[in-house]
Amino acid sequence: MKKNLMIVLVSLFLFGCETTRLNNESRDIQVVWNNSEKINQCTHKETITSSEGHWYTFLFIGNQELTEGALNALKNRASALGANTIDLYAPRTFSTSVTMMGNAYVCPSSL
Image 1 (cartoon, rainbow, N blue to C red):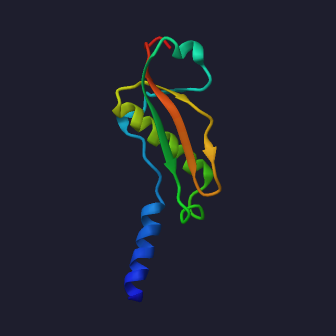
Image 2: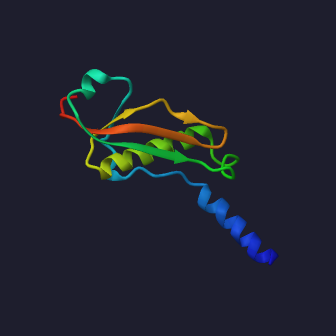
């Protein structure tokens, strides 16, 4: 019983110690913040969210890595929707995680 519990705990720590990686097709996603002029020229796809971190990972992963992972997840989600721009809301940071929310858009390439 103790051995099984230890295996589960170690697995949780190992799985929780990596943040979301940016997919190659997501690298060109543009992130804008409070830029309603440019967004008015775009087609809204969907409101998207992402979150990185858990109660057990904050000891091993810093806020910068959690923020980068949350942004990567947001870009990956936008790319999967066919969007090329994210209008980002203010990130929500907690002591153990980072949550981001924004709107995915398809915008003219001139933005």
